[in-house]
Length: 93
Image 1 (cartoon, rainbow, N blue to C red):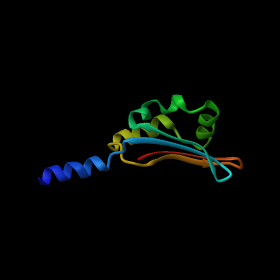
Image 2 (cartoon, helix red, strand yellow):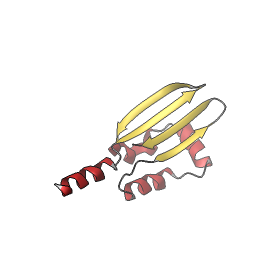
Image 3 (cartoon, rainbow, N blue to C red):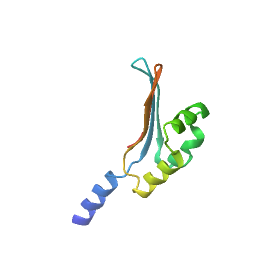
């Protein structure tokens, strides 16, 4: 019984979802939830102009994706950024 409870706790610590939220002027314009396996193709589903902005922040998406996998898919923020028009956040939960 103890092992069953421990396994449940461990599973709860693993992210099962990839979340994407884009806001404009305090209003969400995009709010998407994907299965965690989508993380593997994240860099291909983000619009190219956003990938360029991410690269300017010295964030390497492929490395970040690998770090998340290496951590056992622990829930974490992949990146957050804001400009005058929009705010972007991608994370696992």
